[in-house]
Amino acid sequence: MKKPGAITVKKITRESGEWRTRFEAFYSDCEIKRVDDREHAYFAAYSGDEIAGHSVVYLEEGRWILSGLRVKPEFRERGIAKLLTEARLSYAIGKGAREIWYACDDGNLVTICCHVRYGFEKICPDSHHCTAATAHWYRLKVTPGLFKKFPGVKPPAAGGKA
Ligand SMILES: CC(C)(COP(=O)(O)OP(=O)(O)OC[C@H]1O[C@@H](n2cnc3c(N)ncnc32)[C@H](O)[C@@H]1OP(=O)(O)O)[C@@H](O)C(=O)NCCC(=O)NCCS
Image (cartoon, rainbow, N blue to C red; front, side):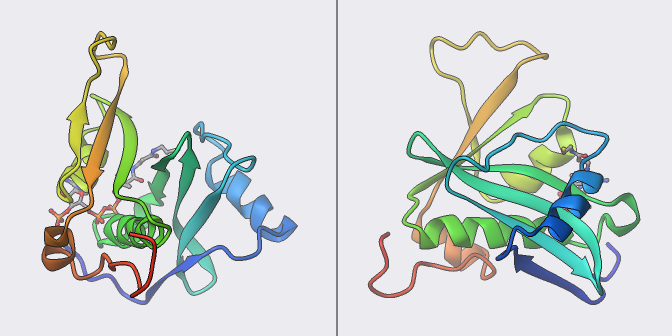
């Protein structure tokens, strides 16, 4: 794997017009779920001022869900997806999440690699008839072992919700 270089991962604290323009451009050729009407946090990886990677975590029906993970082709295989995933896991855990979810279709093997490493497991409810074309839900149970294995995933602050 190439070295990460000077990459900084930040939560987007101000969803300003300038950020939104860059956000729309970043995802212009793919669909991203719109989550602005629910609790959420966007995380971006910057190389200088350039957005190298972007992602979101949002709360829906009591579940914290990871979505929109994307790294620009020229920045891939440097660990940026892992940094963005660990930042979002830490954020949701800080908000009290005991489980974290994401959905992915079977064809997206690299994304599965980025998540399964953390212990996400495929959950197929009885009512869900899986085919190669359907998206499947994956769930990560937050356990003390997660923090030991991945020091980049931060436990909730003392007195926090989890
Ligand atoms: C999937 C994606 C986010 C990975 O980003 P990345 O920054 O290159 O990933 P990382 O360097 O953090 O690697 C994370 C893990 O993913 C796996 N992985 C990443 N790239 C891989 C590749 N080309 N082949 C096999 N496994 C790969 C590895 O398991 C890796 O961990 P390891 O190196 O410790 O084994 C990136 O390839 C991407 O953005 N793909 C397009 C996704 C997209 O456009 N989705 C639509 C969203 S709207």
